Length: 209
Ligand SMILES: [Zn+2]
Figure 1 (tube, rainbow, N blue to C red):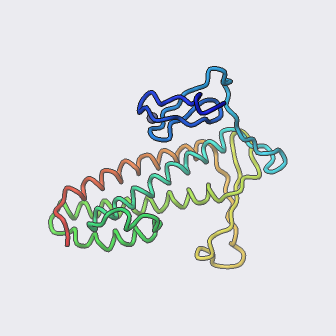
Figure 2: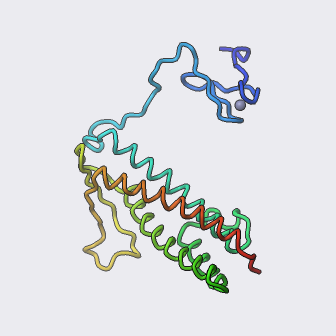
Figure 3: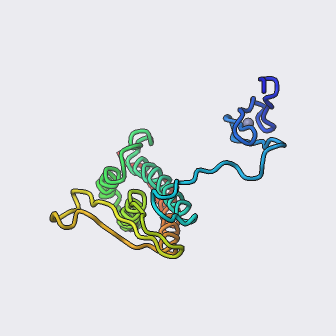
């Protein structure tokens, strides 16, 4: 297929790029399905024998946890920026632990009146809950899932060295049900919402030096 066959985007008029199944606009994200494209697009199947049985819901739910937690981490960068008057590039890529410490340090300057005290207390609770859910996320992402059925999945991962107290507890194993994965996703969604509100709240308060 030559360049002449490349269609322009119907939304932004830029040339689209060919992808499997059709064309895609890298400028605005518009997609155009090729008329002859089959209904099902290619999908990667993990070869059998690597994990054993992988129920289709497991990788999907792991992916949702990954996506939501990644967005939550960028929101935390945004919150750090809004409590210390910096642009987000300053705190981007620093990781939750560093940003959480930076936020808590700044919160002490937000205690001039009852509204600020309430804000400070609320953000401290929020950060503690985020720390918990990110621990779960780490288990889910770094966990190896060798034993699965359709309704319970067993995973294990080595503990971080900072969390181990003896040579015997170097590894952590947990059985998770689909319901527990969904609960983690719901927790992430609600924390995203609360973090967004905290960013707006910080923005509405008087600026600190
Ligand atoms: Zn476009």
